[in-house]
Length: 434
Image 1 (cartoon, one colour):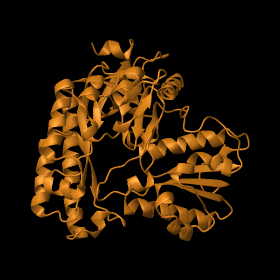
Image 2 (cartoon, rainbow, N blue to C red; image 1 turned 180 degrees about the horizontal axis):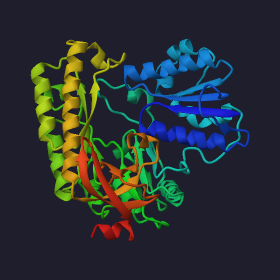
Image 3 (tube, rainbow, N blue to C red; image 1 turned 180 degrees about the vertical axis):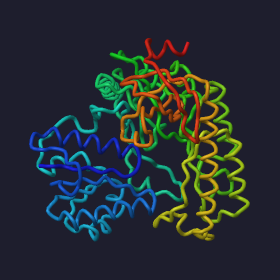
Image 4 (cartoon, one colour; image 1 turned 90 degrees about the horizontal axis):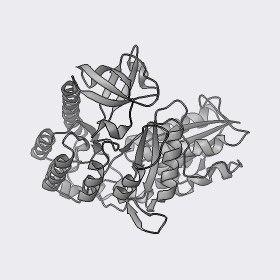
């Protein structure tokens, strides 16, 4: 029986798909299919954060339903929680399973139990791996549907997290990214019952005995959860936790942030950035910025653009506002015309291109810690391979250095990509950062 998997959306979804894949492929009757056309079972893990995400998932579901009607189609993820009706219309015979029941999909399909649910052992041939450590959000952002589809808070117990990270390192993954819906809200307990927050978890993980060098990276983190204690844990990791951070801003206008119901203003955001940079001067910070939020005036947009320009960021993830039924923003007056939102998004993307080009150019002449990227993005480089530095800079290498962490000297840059050559690290990660 051939299975095919497809993921839309965030790192948490990517991790959950990999956990599903490992659980299902552990059954001896199951093998992986290279495409949905020849698959017996198609599993689509959906996203619903924007209207475009809905459209993308529905387009694929309809295509599979029409062109491979003999396949068992399973649709899970956030759209499955938010709008089962639209999925039923797109694919009446599909098995629709919400996020809370993802781990039961193997059993629903009559497969063996396989490895423990909610864990991964790694992906063959890849140097980087994801580990989901937290789920759930209780935020009240006026534009967001995520709390409605990821409503239950949970955190992976520290002992399980340590075992999973150790296993991934033994499997050859030199970089582990910790992800969650609200990563900064991680809260678990150690073996003695002591409460463990994200800072304590990082302190424990960097002390893990390992067969080789490895580093940790944090996925998206809310600025209010970048506490002084967490900053100290990051600074105390001697570089084993990557000094790159994705801290969503959404707008650089305080008036827009209030309408978004974001729990901070620009002064607070700037203050936390300054605190981070005092302890980690070389930290690379990236952010999310939204264009065209309801009521956003031209003056507010220009204020937001100016704030982002002055913040010393290394790159932006730009969104156009997506009107989501059921959110308070959907009913707000002053919905911004699509062409205006598109123009503003283009200006932000132009700024993003400038920031990333400057980031690469400033790296010329420096030595970075890199890991070769083994996930299909090599096509952009004619020879050699693509690598990722500790501060999330893309570095095109003159040769494939193999698995593990390496030192790369950056010799040139073009646009957002740096170019260089590398040699294998001969000592541990910690010895590189005194």
